[in-house]
Length: 312
Image (cartoon, rainbow, N blue to C red):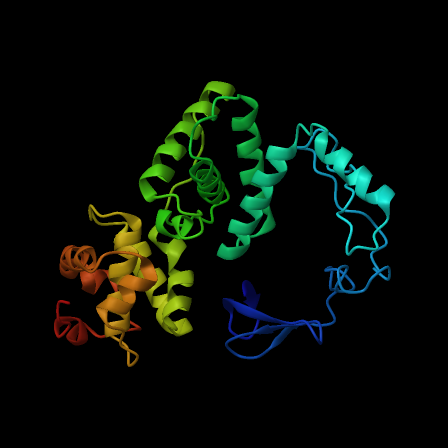
């Protein structure tokens, strides 16, 4: 989903894309905001391994400026079955024996692509992570370090720089066994190396509690109205001196908003969805409680409801 201005609702709302009709529809009132839009994705699906020599692709893969040959070199695939061509088999063996300076980079880029796909990240974040890893690899100083932690840290930094932050726990869940501590150390090492290369501090982008609301709300099955109330609440909470991490505030606000709705969520479910410990959510709730009348939108809950809100 994406956001767009709806002329009927008189505000920016979530829109749904109907790819079969090419329509962009407002999720709140159902108004068709745009019709017959052009689909810029590929015109077919490719089943190269299943269709023999009838692969419909008319072009090769995209060039990659991060690789020495631009990623346009020819790779001789392994022969299939016992009736394979002897020449193809020999050429494949000779190619494997030759030195490929980009072999480690290609494997690293594939790992980053896999992690990005599992997290549902856009291509711009994946490309930024590839660029960060290439800069670190060019300095030849990452040898002997945990490679999975380095790749995960590159992805974490890329998410921060593209203003689509992910928590360390989310990155850790796809990091092939790398721990939070290892990823944290790798992040500090990468930032230090980039600062030495550029001669200036690395812009990471600030993390706000509102950055997590839509995603966490989706995990918990919250309504659009509840998610918007939570987003407004965390934005107002920034006006107060609440010394908690953004993700802890986000988890506490989500718990509060769900308790004020008909679709209440237990503390355990909120903890699992946000990756924040139940004790941390309780403490954040206590810090937010005195400011609830000014934080929770008046259109979502009455002051009397806030007074009756019980501590988790």
